[in-house]
Length: 456
Image (cartoon, rainbow, N blue to C red; front, side):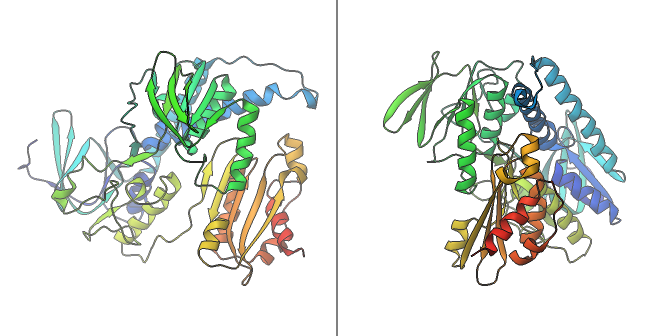
């Protein structure tokens, strides 16, 4: 790489075109900044191309297939045949259309294809094939995202052993699938493939799956796993992968799990190791993350970092919010990132959570109160044929302030929006109970849970 060429000046350089990067670039351009966005692959990043969007497309197909097979009670006699190749084409069409939409968002932003590496605190070289371009920037935003974490004893070969990207690109539904990792990615894809016809086994090292969610919510998912015939091994260690399957040790016993395919979903690792951070005066933590302040500024004042390369959940909506903050801070606005971040999992039922769990609140010394309402009492859930699940409020009994909301049930990922506003604004349970929710809708469950907290 030639490093002595004259660097082109630019006000703001954004490295990475995922949800955080393209949001930051678009916002900086809105604020009148000259912006160059560098993307190594495709606009939209992991989320749009091989993560959030294609996985939800696959999950939707799986949900619809299972729903068709269960319509008999409503008077509809139907059966369905899955054309998985057509599913994959449909999924890719959605991705392609949305990628084009990102390009429309970036009007006024120059997009440069290539891999960026720092040369010093104010310069990068962008390599694309044999071509190298140099930029000198006033400010830079690092938004390079993350990749699936590897498992040394079970390396992905893209054929029998795949990561989440590979699992979304399979040409056919495997007869048997072993999912290593019981976090939200493994559980989403594992349950989807179970509905599509695979015999699925989940192997998790911890003593429970979906460890980031309240235990009451996880119990709802465990019931669904049983209905789907998914086997779950917790507190487990994996051994070798043989022709017969994946060797697993759990509860003092060793068994061989059937595995035509193995999905390794053991977390994600930030993409910071190939940026030549040391040339910019930066260093990553032991986990590969960059430390930032409330405005997403690193230890080098004109360098910012957002999204998966910073601490916290690797979620697109977190990255986008951080991207707006960083762009506005560069423009001199008093923006800061101190919002609560909702968590969602497109399992069956869907899970969504924001704020403190009951255990978190007790550990913080709060005067904890909890209240629950179940979707079984919801008229809308009944008409949708999805009466399973619950809403759980966690609140401070002394101040009546909502500390956390936890949902398992139909459209939980949509319902968490109101709950997030309630936690963000320190809403009182009394106010949530008094809010008139339209009937018959699923969101009524939040008012039901709040009123349950008022009962003696």
